[in-house]
Image (cartoon, rainbow, N blue to C red):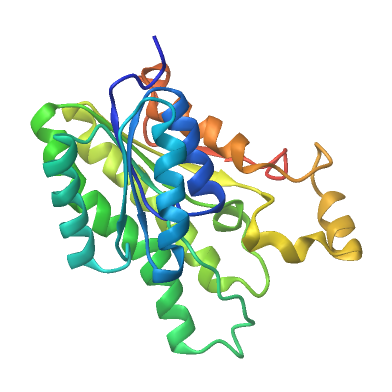
Length: 251
């Protein structure tokens, strides 16, 4: 039996990068997948992902929804419940970065990062805990970041949002543990995605790699593997934890 056989998983921001890898890896493990994407430009890619996921013999559907908007999340989850009947796993993956030194950062830049990275986790969790509490089971996986633990110059908004996710995760684990609902976070290090393309510059890449004990950047598939573990019954006694998938950067 596959690790996520017949489970229904909601994943935000799955049109590319880590979210896309998570959706595919979960489908490989038997989960039916409902995922969100935010922009019209991602619609074609979302349809292609539906087809790719469906090839694993599971149900797949993408929904255009802004995770940073409460009403969008409410409609998204309600639509998923109507289409799939239940929700077993929620992966709060949607995220952006608008890096800038605090001296130059605008209030709009700060608010955008907080809405997509942190408020989205509240928005989605608020919606999915109702059906999870009714069924007395569920796993919530929140995508934080090593930057939320260590901080980083020029990334105060990103670091604050990802640190907030960790505090939220631990609090929700305490609130919902008695209902057999688990909540954990993953703190990826430097992962090869579109968001980290700038790190591939020769000198920049070398400087970061020197700090990573494993001597390389991680892959989206490695984060997806960790997510599948936390979503599955293999982690049934794990809640309120933060797994740093960072190649040892956080040692």
